[in-house]
Length: 287
Image 1 (tube, rainbow, N blue to C red):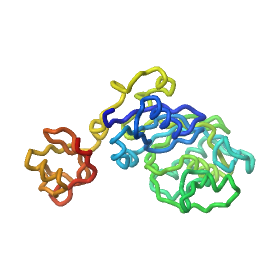
Image 2: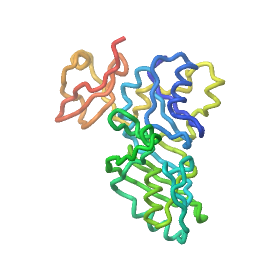
Image 3: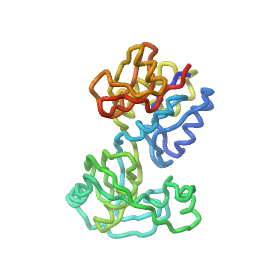
Image 4: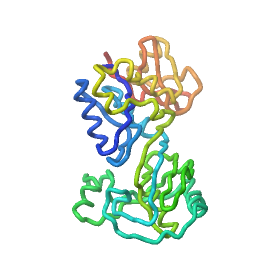
């Protein structure tokens, strides 16, 4: 199977790992990885990297993500979602205008503490594994960015948000914090990831469809095309030989940052442009 990217619409009730294992088993693949976990309660776009495309996971992990979150005000849970244990029930004495005002306060760069039931590792152990044992956790706050927040629907105590966020943002924590700021608390009832970068869930295969197709030809996207959010550089034969051998070369175009690198041989991988020079960063293996 060629190094490629597969877009899957994950259903509710299964882990991201299960989707990875299903694709791996169904199509006899050696390596499959995902680029951002979705909780079992969440649905939506999961980007899978197939075979040597896994080399480029960091670039997909950095992409912005868009979510639609259905929240219930007035009920707080230990997981910040509907699958958790109810910790407190409060009276909901807020208006839709209050929700919009508070939601807007979270747009921009914010400091966020990951939820205790998360995949964050503490001493090599997942936080949710420790939380399930009753171990109290104080996860380190991180800086994230909320690019856009919109109130899609408001029928107190049910509200529906749409958020566009940076990588590493926990929507469960965001909704919990909005609820705390409102004074009534909140948890997520439903969560759907609709976009990753420019990739939309409308472009994804359903989980059920994975059972009916024989191979991934025609549905998987070659990794060099999937990385098209990076500029492209093409090398001549001399540049190719130097670059392939690990040398830093003068860049054939003006560029800065990460770029896709091509030659007559095809896609070579990702290079890094700095100070007018291009150096190898993540390369495809030699055939």
